[in-house]
Image 1 (cartoon, rainbow, N blue to C red):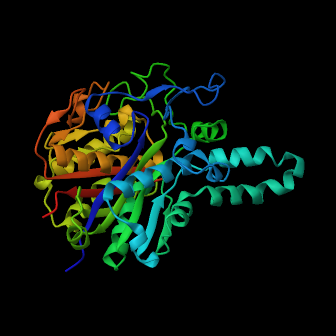
Image 2: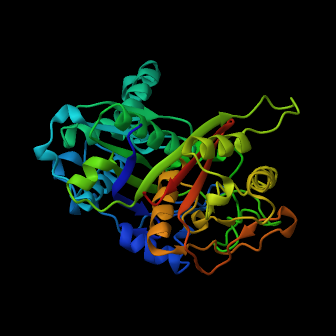
Image 3: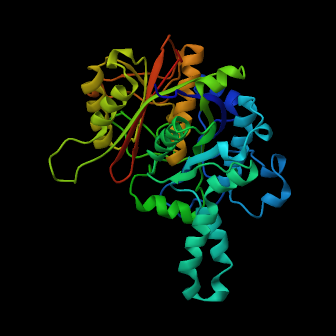
Amino acid sequence: MSVTAVVTGMGVASPNGLGTKEFWSATLNGKSGLGRIQSFNPAPYPARLAGEILGFEARDHLPSRLIPQTDRMTRLALVATEWALADSGVNTADMIESDMGVTTASSSGGFEFGQNELRKLWSLGSEHVSAYQSFAWFYAVNSGQISIRHRMKGPSSVIVSDQAGGLDAIAQARRQIRKGVRLVVSGAVDASICPWGWVAQLAGGRLSTSEDPSTAYLPFDHRASGHVPGEGGAILVMEPAETARERGATIYGEIAGYASTFDPQPGSNREPGLRRAMLSALANAGMRAEDVGVVFADASAIPELDRSEAEAINAVFGRGGVPVTAPKTMTGRLYSGAAPLDIAAALLCLRDGVIPPTVNVAPDTDLGLDLLGPEARAASPRSAMVLARGHGGFNSAMVVRVPE
């Protein structure tokens, strides 16, 4: 019998709420964190809106020595980790260092650190830039910083598969727990709201250029024209269910099933891989489609991608057969941080019996989804499925449920 991996702590850093309690309250009340960029002047760029975490001062949470060594992404991740560990009630000082691991995801983060370092390099000449860029990227990865700060010398890794990476990292954490690791810090926090990162995101051609935060990010809406990026995410503490129960920990839920697929080559006329990922995740959990009480959508706000996601959901659950929500309309797409934040929201949804809303969207009825509107919905789901897709064809699906 395989070991059951459960979530016992979470730390959230989100544009619409800093901390789990603030995030969940804001989300249930439909509070958006989208607005005009404040961290730099966005006027020269065609896209000017983002989901920024305002009011976060790293010096209020971290030792001053860490500030010059890290970028914003890593600072947010370190603070979210502190909150997650405190929430779990675990005392890492009493644990064997090799029994604790870290598995996170990264996608667009590291740009700020790299940008600041490259500014210092111009005097060295262009021949030094390429190598130093690689160093900056490696240094910015936050998994190592978490490991060092909390003496976690067990398995450590970083998954890079864009937005799907957040689920892939949590799945890898589950694998490590099943192999005998007693505690794994997992999830992701991404942050690249800086000029260098902004140019990189614009190059993908998927950013909304709307100036109105209420109409800029509209997944599953006939007006959809791209997404609004954001910063933040969630860090989770995961343990074997037996260990968590022995120490009397509060269990948010179980990571019950997971699967990932890759889309076929464009032009092949083959079906995208999301439906297969969903069915495989259900099989991995030993569940049927009718057992799932809510789906947290990837919600790209690219019309053709929205349609393919809706078709996959309908193929698995039936047309309008399951409530669908996209609370990321209040935060923007957080890249690798998006799916862990959805996992946190899904677990809170199961705990409190309420499905969070999807704000601003007028659903395209042709898509056939039971998409939540601007109001939260009372419900009693026992399980939830979270979907995530990465640029280039990555698909991941994860099922969380109330533990047996």
